[in-house]
Amino acid sequence: MAGAPILEVLSPGILTTVQDLGRGGYARWGVAPSGAVDALAARAANLLVGNPEGSAVLETTLLGLRLRLLRDTRLAVCGADLQANLDGQALPLWRSVSVRSGRILTFAGPRWGLRAYIAVAGGIDVPAVLGSRSTNLASGFGGFQGRPLRRGDVLAAGEPPPTEIEREFDSAAAGYDGPPWRLRILWGPQDEFLAEEGRERFLTTAFTVSPDSDRTGIRLEGTAVPVQPGTPDSIISEGILSGAIQLPADGRPIIVLAETASGGYRKPATVIAADLHRLGQIMPGDEVRFAAVTLEEAVALLRRREEAFRAAFRPPLCG
Amino acid sequence: MNEAADGLRFRFMGERSVLVELGDRIAPETHRRVHRLMRLLEQENWPGIRELSPGYRSLLVVFDPLELDPAELTRRIQKRASRPAAGEIPPARRIVIPVFYGGEHGPDLPEVAHRLGMTQEAVIQRHTSLVYRVYMIGFTPGFPYLGELPEELSLPRRSTPRTRVPKGSVAIAQRQTGIYPVESPGGWHLIGWTPVELFHPGRRPACLLETGDEVRFAAVEAVED
Image 1 (spheres, rainbow over the protein chains, first blue to last red):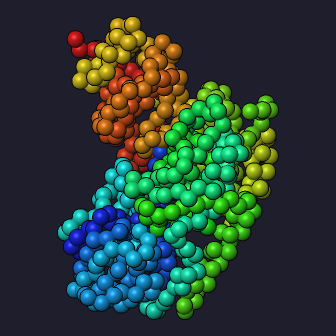
Image 2: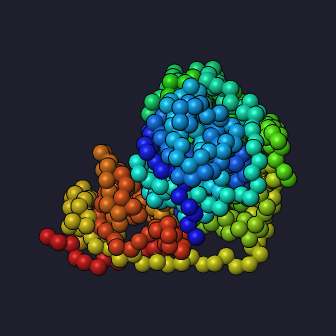
Image 3: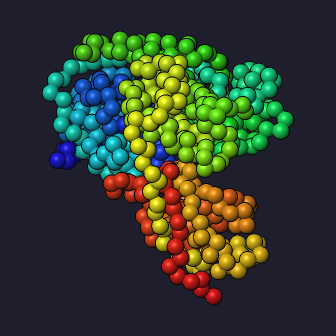
C-alpha cells in the first residue's frame, strides 16, 4: 500500500535525492552501494522522528530546495546547516519538530557543511529496489523514479510510528570538526608503491577539495604524491568501498564515495569508518589533511563513535 | 609477490573490508580459486559478513568490525580455504549470447578488422569460436568482463572514448570482451549488439550473468556490406 502524500517539491535545489543507508550485497553485480554520504546524519534524523534508522530520507546538497508540507507531520533536519527555514522562521537542526500542513520548508545555503538530511515520520515511501530505497544516479534506478527530485514531484510517507516523542541530538557527539578537515586513514590496500617520500607527502600535504567533486568522489588538489619509479598507472580491477583513496598517475588523490563498486587505480590508504560521515560534509575549496592510525585504533574509534552516537539523544533512545 | 601454492594475501581496505588476493595475474586458475573461496565463505555464512565481491584475482570481503574482529576474520578465512568444500562447488553455467555483428550494430568492426589485418568475417568467426569466462562484473551494473580474448583480436582501447555507447553493445579491448548493459560512456571497440537484457533491477535475478559463468557468442546475422 502506497503511503499518503506528504511533501511537494516546489524547487529541487542543486541536487536532492531519496537515500537510505545504501544497497549492500550487490557489488558482485557491479551495483554501487549509493545511500546517504553522511550516514550518521541520516540515521540521527530518522531516530529523532521515531523511524528505524535505515528509513528513506531526502539528501539535499548546498542550497535551493523548497518543499511544501501536504499534511501535519514530524520531521527532523540533520547534517549540514543550510539555513533551513520554515515559513520565515529558522528551523532548529538535530531535533524533531512538529510541522503543520501547508508550511513551506526552504534551504537558503550553507553556513556549514554540504549535505542536509530530512526525515519525516514514517519515512519517505518509495519502492525498495534490490533491497534499498537509495537512488542509483548513474544507472537510474531506486529512490524516486531513479532520478533526482524535480519541481512538482509529490513524495509519500509510510505509516508514522505510534509514539510521538520530542527528541534532540547533541551533534557535537557526531564528531564533525572541519573545515579544515583532518581525516584518519589506514594505510592500504596498496601502499607499498609509495616511497617513504610519498608517505610523508601524503601525511603532510594540506590538500584542497576540487570543485569537480560529487557523490562519486572527492577530488583533491595539492602537491602531487610521488610513487616508486616504475609503478604502473593502474592495477587489475577489484572491488572498492567508499572511503578508499585512489591515487591516479597525476598524483592527486580521489576519495571514493558511494557510487562506485570497483576500480583499477591504486589505493594507498582508506579513510576509517569512524570518519566516513564527515566525507559527506566536505565542500569544494575545503582543506583536507590525513593522519594515519592502526587497525586496532580504527576499530576502537568506531566502537567509541557508535557509543557516543547512541548516547547523544535526549531523551535517550529506548532499547 | 611471494605466494605459496594455496597462499592467500590479505590487504585490508580500511577496518571494514579486506581484499583476499589469490594470485597476481589474470588467469583462469587464479579466478577459479577466487570463485571457490567465495562459495566456501557463502556456505560458512559467518555473522558480520556484509558483502562478498569477486574480482579477477581477489575477493573483497566487507564486514562489520564491531561484530567480527578483523584479525579473527583473516584467521578463519585462511583456515577455511585450506579445507575442502563442505558440499559441491556448482560447475560453471554456460550461456550463449546471440549477437548481430557489424553494420549499424557494430560500427567499429570495419576499423577493427582493418587494424588487425583480418576480414570482418574472420573477426566474427574468431570472436564466436571461444568460450569466455566472466572474470568480474562491474563498471556499470551487469557489465561482464569476459576473458580471455585471443591475442590476434587484441587492440588497445580507443584513444577517445565515446560519451554514449548504446545499451547491448558487444565490445572488445585488449585481451577482454564485454557487453554494455546500459547506455554509458565507453572506450572499447563496438563490434556487435545483442538484444539480451543483461541487467534489469526489477527482474529476478536482476543480473543475467554471475562471475564464474562461461559465455559463448553466436552470430545471428552476417556482416552487412
